[in-house]
Amino acid sequence: MAHNHDHKEAHSGTHSHSHSHSHTHAVSASLAGSKAFIIGIGLNLAYVLAEFIVGLWIHSLALLTDAGHNLSDVASLGLSLMAFRLAKRQATESYTYGYKKSTILAALTNAVFLCIAIGVLGYEAVERFGHPQPVQGGVVAWVAGLGIVVNGLSALLFFKEKNELNAKSAYLHLMADAIVSAGVVLAGVVIYFTNWYWLDTVVSLCVLVVILWSTWSLLTDSIRLSMDAVPKNIDLAKVREEMLEVPGVLTASHIHIWALSTTENALTAHITIETPSDRAAIIASVKHNLQHCNIQHATIEVDEASSPILDNCIP
Image 1 (cartoon, rainbow, N blue to C red):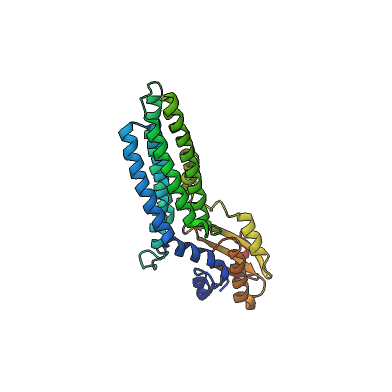
Image 2 (cartoon, rainbow, N blue to C red):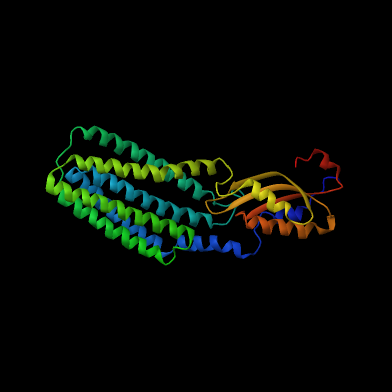
């Protein structure tokens, strides 16, 4: 046949070859289920509940927004833990890719939840700005100071693993939260000595801006991945170049790339080769090069250079 398919090779394209490139994902999956994540979630959840209750009690919008900020970390860590565990489950006849995409859905859910929280707290802050309420600055400072301790301890849990992408993200986010809590402590001290109650609202608005800034990219990225767009960390031109660099590959076309999860990507493509006898070696080399482009699962369709189908092939 002119349009020559190798079903065995096409099927094998859905599985990444045994190579050190898969190490990062393996570390991520094991780290997600480690004690660091579980302890970090427990510490932050307990603190969020305490901060939220005290914030309601003393009418401190700064504490409530900081609680929302810390809750974003709890949600992120919790959803990631759940999603990575789902991603490790075996594929089924109904879910042939397994549950990998749950990581993307988890990120999208987290982002939407945070946007709703920003809207509610932002509305309250604007309403209160013209009518500041008395706030116990000393209590604000002590509770926010506890946040520095909790976020600092949580960050230390990930410090020894911070060279791994997911651990590094958690470490930096928790350290940033500690800095935000330090700002709330400062505001509480100033309120205690000056009775500048409006400062509570100003600090809450500043924290909301921080949450919005960190949430916006999460929202847009998760929407992109949910719609099977090419992940932002993958250059389509570079992928094509890597495929064409393999000796024997003449053209690479019909390239489709999408995210299977927040850590794994897939590709289907059509290549034409010069020598049919080198088919298996060429496919293996193409897949190897694609690993360097952060593509773990590739399905390659192959045609021979002498095939008439080339007349309709888009390079």
